[in-house]
Image (cartoon, rainbow over all chains, first blue to last red; front, side, top):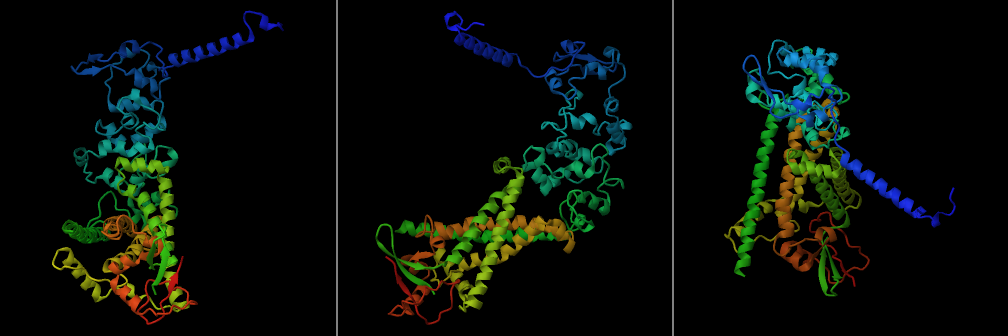
Amino acid sequence: MNKNASGKAWGKGHWLLASVTLLLLLGVALLLGASSAQALDENNCLSCHGTPGLTKTNGNGDVISLFVDEKKVNTAAHRYIDCTTCHTAEPHKVETALTKLSLAQKCGSCHEYQYRLHLDSVHGRQLVYGNSDVATCVDCHSSDGSPHSVIRVLEYAAPAYKKNIAQTCARCHGDEGLMASYGIVDKVYESYMRSFHGKAMQLGAYEISQLDKATCANCHGYHDIKPASDPASPVAGLENLAATCEQCHTGAGVKFASGFLGHREASTDNVPVAYYTEIFFSSFLVIVIGFGALIVLLAIVRYSLNRWRE
Amino acid sequence: MATLVRTVTLKKQAEDQIARFDIHQRIQHGMMMISFIFLVLTGFPLKFSSAGISQWWVALWGGIEATRAVHYAAAWVMVASCLYHGGYLLYTVLVLKRPFPIRIFPTPRDARDFFLEIMYFTGLRKEGPHFDRFSWREKFDYWAIFWGIPIMAGSGFILMFPVAATNIFPGWIVPVALIAHSDEAMLALTWIFMVHIFFTHLAPGIFPLNKSMFTGKVSRERYIREHPLEYERMVSVRRPEPEPEAEPVPEFPAPPVTPGPEEEKETE
């Protein structure tokens, strides 16, 4: 114990100064040294596969990219699962062709429940037949279709985050040509965005508490999504539809559900009364506003002329 | 009966002011104006939801739930102003036994005034029509609300309580209400900003701001110009001796011409 510190070369003041400086330096070092999380890469796969442009040519002569974007994999949901968990212990010996189905199967080796639901969905049933048009895991969970970019659903940038779901579905369901080949002619995305649900979803903030409005999946289902023509679909028939509405609109019945225009515009054979209301109000609007614009315009001309002649 | 009130302005110049609107009418107009502005501010982004500015604007209010809450609150204020208006009318007529405000009703003369005004605007006449207490434009604005409020409030309440509405009406009432609400709102907004604002605030002799709906008073000079027929009647029926005990009777909106006392009040 030294009670006479002031006599020493290193007084209390000096110690304090030194500690503060050290802390500051440590802070700066931490800031400089801080980087985003590193994906787990036990076998150093990224030392080769992290090189952009790395490709191979398979037996069919197709050039296949072997590049894995380190930036994306570092923020991916599975960043702490080693490459070989999915790519097997000897990844270079894999000979099976990569298909949408094999990709889904791979996800399903852990996410079994979702995979089984998916296989029984309108998308999954087609997947089994080798149809590559249909959506599978990565089409909705990855922003670029790569399994290395799958991020958690509750991240704002996730394609399956509630605010983004409609846009994600619209990647395919907004493609008129693709939809027409399956006989889907309704402009589902446009009609959703016209509805109050879509507008509120678009105007709302990203906080999940602000997103308590229905989006595609709330009515049609998620992994087990069924076509509206399937009696098991939550939107098949007024009874099912009413039960689906009722999940949010307490007390909603068949009458309430019957007011839904479907994903179509009102027309002479789709809620005609709404169609005629639309015609009435838009004509009325044009006539009255036209009349108002005319008298204002005439008045402006008259008043200007009066002023000019003064 | 309109009351002549002589007031002293801040510049200490004596200026003749004529009372045109009583305090209740001013409050009713104020409630309607303020609620209208808030309804537009919080409703318009929904109509143009895909515009980036709408998303920015809603975020500024604190999200869609905030604009929705304000929209609901403003809707109740607007409905309250209408109930106030109707209730006040009944009160003045039934309890205070004032004459029914017949002058606000459209007459063939308004059609004539309309054509005269169009002729004046287009240069077919040298002079515009002379108006009584309410011009055809003022009547149009007033009665437009009798069409607009039932449409807007009716459809608005259906959208506010869609499940309850479909318990009473068929299901199509909800999409129909949405169309009506959206289109009628555009109509009201355009009319107010294009026609109402132009003729009541921007027209020559009034620009930049017409304060009469807020102060209740109109200058004598402007009254003579804008409502000459009513002014003549006011002056002609005025007694030479004002009755000191008589209270200035506010009008709602205007009693028919009855030869009666016309008060003149001096305020210094």
